[in-house]
Length: 429
Image (tube, rainbow, N blue to C red):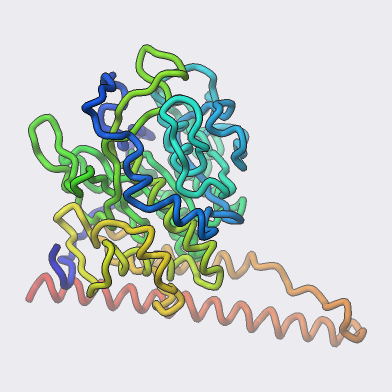
């Protein structure tokens, strides 16, 4: 990896057709015969020492994770004892978030969800990294011919952004999305909302080196996850080209993994699969476990810990925007070993080359949240006050709260602008 500053790259946000790919997963739709010579499809579980982490009590309990994917089958045995909720409705108009049919969409969504909360039974024997987390599945539905819902159209949002906005409104602690695709203009405001709320969004990068700057992994503030194999090597395509995606944040295990269901098979079958889709829930699980262990840490501090504590050993912060590894290999044990409260309470991913959302959009999100903040309620133990005193107190307190939030937004805007200017200076030097 290369340490030091990033080169400044400005890309204009262009509205694209609301199309999504399981980008996620290379070869998910292709059968791969399981043989005794193939590596264990659950090798990551031992490599991450998940069993020991669970024995210490870090199972994601109390953490609310939103999974945004295509479809899933919640009635599979691997979810029998999971705290799993299906959000009503789908992101694609006329579709459903769940199905009992075995297809590429339902296998994909079921597999990535099981990597979070699976119990190890059924096809693939997938065990979740945070089995006690509370997961809400927001389904796009069948991706072929996906059209946004009227609600998404009205908000100028892609189907995925519409579901992210719903997850934020529902109070998700963090969001995991293993989809890539085009964006609409309103999508930047959704990411800005998450940035201001300090809710980490973990997103898989494309599995094709020729696809860059895809929604949502390329957006500022978003944890962009690439996949590596057992030798910590990036996956390669049919041309033997490594999957180097610019502005990757971290890499994590993603090949070869067991799937739930198999092409032309049933839910009792499994095959080997690979891709960033599988690495994404593992990184979300790392953040969820750390969130449980360090409840005083903000989402921004957890992202700081994720990028500072890659690999097994302590090291100086290093980053490469263009080698496909970003800050390095995400480490469950290392992140849990370090108290994230020591880090700056600031999202470290606000300097991505794709400069959306910009400072103005983030400031607008902060102002909108300030205006929507509920008025403080009276304490039941406080002495009664007349209406005039109560009104005056409420206005003063409300003004202070609004002022603090607005000042924070202004400071954030100044920081972003200065960083942007610094980036351009570095490019010119």
